[in-house]
Image 1 (spheres, rainbow, N blue to C red):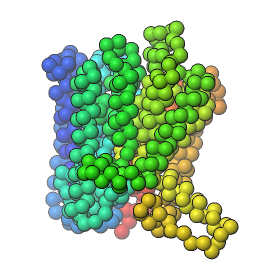
Image 2: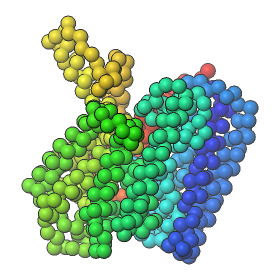
Image 3: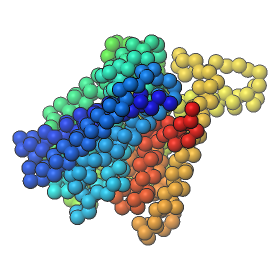
Image 4: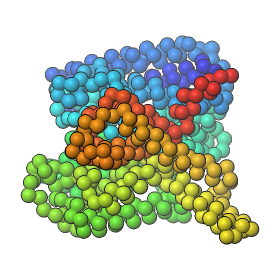
Length: 530
C-alpha cells in the first residue's frame, strides 16, 4: 500500500475544505446582513477550523513529498472513502469551535457536529439543530458553512479535485469510484473532460437558481443557501419550516418559489450527462434514455396517486408547515395547490433532497408507503441524488424478467440491454448484489438503533411507532434522504437521539453516499495487508 500517495490526496482534501470555509467568512459582515455581536463566534470558529485544516494538509503533504506517483487499484479504493472521512471530521470543526448550540443552552457535542457535517457533505439534509433562525444559537456564517457542505459534497469532493488538478491516469480510478462509472469511458482526458462538464453544469445551475430566487424576492443569502441545497439534493434550509416558511411570507409568491425548487430538484436528480447532451443539441439521446423515462414515469405516477389519495383522506391544508402555528382554522387546498404540494413532496423525497412544505408523515398510509419506495429508489445515475438509483432498479427488473422467462422458456436467449447499452452477466450480478446489500444495510442499521436507542421518545406510540420511526429514518440515512416519520419527521430533528445513535446514523450516511462497498472495505483488516 502506497501510504505516502494516499496522504498526498488527503492533504489536498484538507486544503480544499479550508477553501470552502473561506466562502462562509464574508457573511459575517454587516453589509451582508451580519451582526458582529453574534457573528464574532462564527468567524473565530471558522478561522480556527481553517488553521487546523491547513495544518493537517501541510503535514500530510510534507509526509508525502517522496511518494511514488503511480496509483494502483488498492490506493484508489482507499483514497476516496478516507478523503470523505477526513472531510467530514474537518467539516465538523466550525460547529465545535464557534460554540454553536443544538438547542437553547445546549452546545453541540462532538457526535452532534459529526452528524451535522456528515449530513451536509453526504447531502442527506438531516439535522440535530432545533432553531436555525436565532443567530445567538447559530451564527449566519455557520449557517452558510452548513449550506456550503452541501455544495461541496453534492457533486462529490473528488470530482472537484479531478476537475481542478486532473491527476492524469489516477483521475480515471477516482472518477469511476466517485461517480459509480457514470459517463466515464475512454482515455484519461475524457475523464477530466467529464469532470469539467459535470462541475460546469452544477455551478451554472446553482447560479441560475440563485438569481431566480433572488428575483422572486428572497434575500441573496437565502437564495444561495437554498440553491446549494437544491442542486446538491441535500435539503438544508435557513428556516425551521424549510420551504414551507415562504408560505407564511405574505409578500412572497410561495407557489412560484415552490415550482422553481421543484424544477431544480428534478434537474439535480437527473443524469448530468443528459443535461450536457441537451445543451449541445443531442435531444434524441435524451429522449431515448431509458433511465430518464423511467424516472419521469415514477414521478408522475406516484404524484398522481399521492394527490388523489390525499384528496380522499383530506391530507392537504392551506398553509403547509405553518398551519398549526399561524392559521388554526386552515381550510382544504384547491386542487391545483394540493397537486403542487403532492408534486413537491414526491420530487423532494425521490431526489433525496428532503425539503418539506407540510407534515407529510401524517398523510395517509398509501402515500407513506410510496414515499418509502421512492426514497429507496432515488434519482438517476450521474446526478447528485442518493438512493439505489433508477438505472439500477431498471436493470434489476430486467434481470428478474429474464430469469423468470427461463423457467418456462429455458432455450430462449435474449439480448441484455439498457437502452443502447449491452449488459453483461457481471453487470447484472453486480446490480442485484448491490440492491441486496443495500436492503441488508438498512435492516442492520435499523436493528442497531433499535438496540441502542432508548424507548423514552415513544411513550405515546409504543413499540410499533418506535419501529416505524427508526426504520424510516434508517432508510432515510442510508439513502441520504433526510426526514423520517413520527418523532423524526418533517417538523422534527435528530437532536433528541442518543449520541451513539447519531454516530451509527453518521456511518449510515457515509456508507450510503459511497455506495456501501468502499466504507466497509476500509474497515476490513485484510484490505490493508500486502
